[in-house]
Length: 107
Length: 158
Image 1: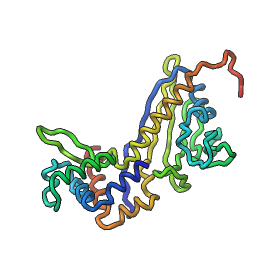
Image 2: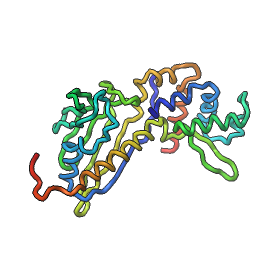
Image 3: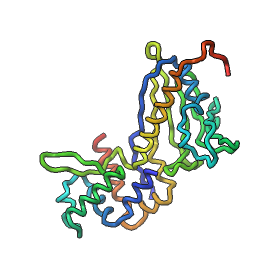
């Protein structure tokens, strides 16, 4: 399940450290890597995993990319439910609009 | 640690070409016909999704073998305009009687059709019961401080 993935993503101590660096606001990769005992490419990999888990989002700012905790996305569980309801409501709409037998009988 | 952070509710809005009464009926009495059969807590193959038409009624699935699994409860039953279901499935898609998240559905006339608005809220509660979640919050380097940061961030941007 998506939410479990999010938690699994944080099980790795280095990745969690990367995540915690974002607690006070968005940062570019270079600033995140500063003070961490791993290379910048490794930090990028961790950011990618966090992003896939729905915990972190990124945006372009000038020529750099700013990573931040997604306040709305806390929990890939939300994203999961979002997709679930899309799927369910699509099926619901199709069912509502299905042509009905000429005389609808009380079931 | 008793810290939670509000997660934005999931909100959906769609228009269907049918009057509110029919939309409400299909959403509730006809749920078996549209509920994704893959999304169930049943061990047996999914057969029906049942919403009992009253406040306090059960919301559950019934399998092909007759077995039943709870999804939640009916909190508000106000046909054909409004419905609130209590969704009690956690993040692992398991029934948890102590979990209360709400799914509110509004059916508003829109010309010949109906505007259907759905809001699934209090999603943050889903994390509370999960042992893995608790470990992540309470464990070394846990989420406590981070969650505080989230809260500040959310309140700042509110």
